[in-house]
Length: 186
Image (cartoon, rainbow, N blue to C red; front, side, top):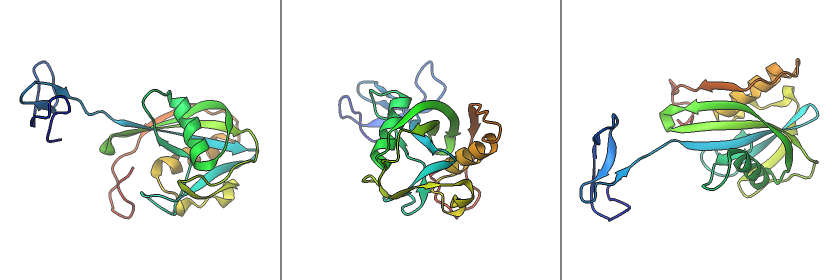
């Protein structure tokens, strides 16, 4: 950040009085510009024993498979964001949403929240951000072609919990990647 969104004057980084973190502060009007994590909301849509995945039509990770998810918008709840993203990316309607995984990705300032959800029907299709959308049985999941570690982790938890049909809310963090074989998007 170089300029204040309030007055347009230059900003500098410093720890404001009463704070403990480095912030962008306007040198002219003293406005403190807080930068906070983004929330990614999505669904793990289920139909019987199958889960719905989308092949990404956009970067990052174009061509890789993911659960329908995206950034939360102002003015919506996390659940509304998950429903909207599922509709936008998979043209799919879901019901009985239940929060399932909450995964912190602090090295890129994101929190990923996935809901388990039931597909309302089989009327789904690739949205503008998807190349294709399809249902997968557990043994068909393209594990090596998943776009993001948070998606893989959510699927691992789901298939581990499915035999008992007990789906506790999972909360964990994803550390930075050690290698660069996958872009550092999570």
